[in-house]
Image 1 (cartoon, rainbow, N blue to C red):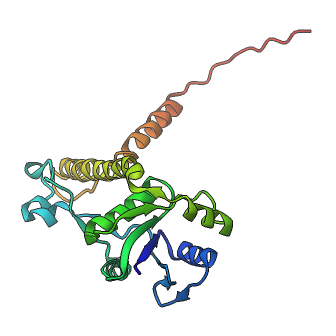
Image 2 (image 1 turned 90 degrees about the vertical axis):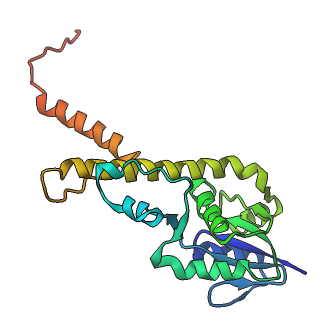
Image 3 (image 1 turned 135 degrees about the vertical axis):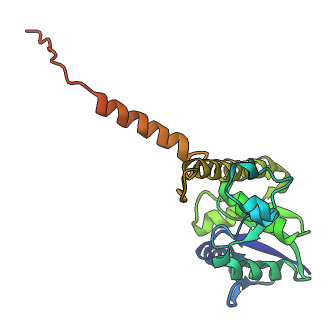
Length: 225
C-alpha cells in the first residue's frame, strides 16, 4: 500500500499535522505513519536562475545586454536551504510515495513554494491540496477530510508563477538598467528597482516633496453661538 507525502511550508506546521492526525513516528527530517509521510520546506527553497546562469554574457550590467527575457524560467536551489530540498526530493522519489499533498500556507506564496518543488523535482505523483485557515487539531483533521482537487488550485498556481516571473523581469532588467545609467561616468552605483518597491518609493518621494514645498498660511475657523 502506497503512502501520501504531505509537504508543509515549515517544520512547525509539519509537527502540528503529525500530532493532529496521530500515529506517526518521527525521523530526523520527517514523520511517518502507515498512511502518510509528513515533511516540510523552510519557506522558499528555489529561486529563478539569474541571467548569467542562462548565458554568461547576460551577466554584464550594461545596456547592450538588456533586456533579459529568458525563453523559460528555470529554477535553482537557494544555497542556505538546499539540504532541505534534498530531503524532499529523496522522499518524493521513494517508491511507496504515490501521492502528494500540498500543505503549504493557504495563499499564493504557499502555492508557489510547493509548485516550485514539484517542478524542480519533476514529481509525477497526483496532487491534493490541504487548505487550512486554522491550525487547531480539529481544523487540521477537518481539512484532510475536505482535500481540494489539484485542478481547482491551478488558477492560484498560475497567479503565483506570474507574480514571481514579473518580479524577476522588472527587478533584473530595471535594476541593471538603472545601475548602468547611474554608473556611466565611472564606478558602480547599484540602484535597485522592483515591481512593488519602485512605485511605493515614488509615492513616498511625491509626499515628501509636497511636505517640503508646503507654505503655511493663516486661516480662520467659524464657531456658531
